[in-house]
Image (cartoon, rainbow, N blue to C red; front, side, top):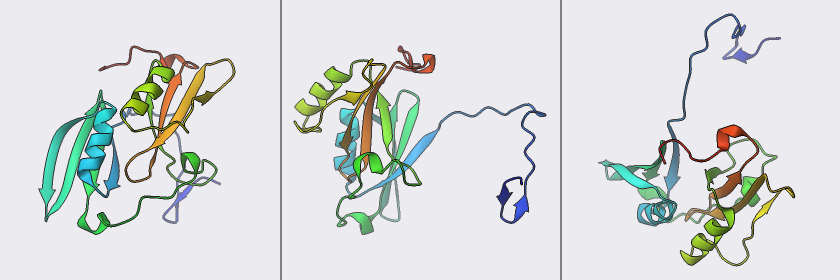
Length: 164
């Protein structure tokens, strides 16, 4: 049976039509403390490209290469505790798991983030034995998992990356 959307069955004919192309635009994240989040993501290389306030709330767009994060800071979230999510946000559960950012030297990245106070000695590099993919996770100021990854399994991940 074809997929249903709002009670209407859709017949997908993607092979019969020219496919429209898309590219990533942004990921939106609500934060408790805009300044703490800007410090954290700034340490990963993000730069502020737009800052807006609306009804006393704050929206900031930050950019890393061609990728944008859209950070929202609502007053009601200021006193909330950080998220308490399982490692990587429980990959077996439905929903968004984590943000991931690539590096060309995973071990140097871990040293750098430890020096900046964003990782501690409990964090270590994990990965495949043959070394084609290695990663570690840190959490942002709100408890959201952020993966740092060195990925050499597929050509699309090869450095140098566009816009960097």
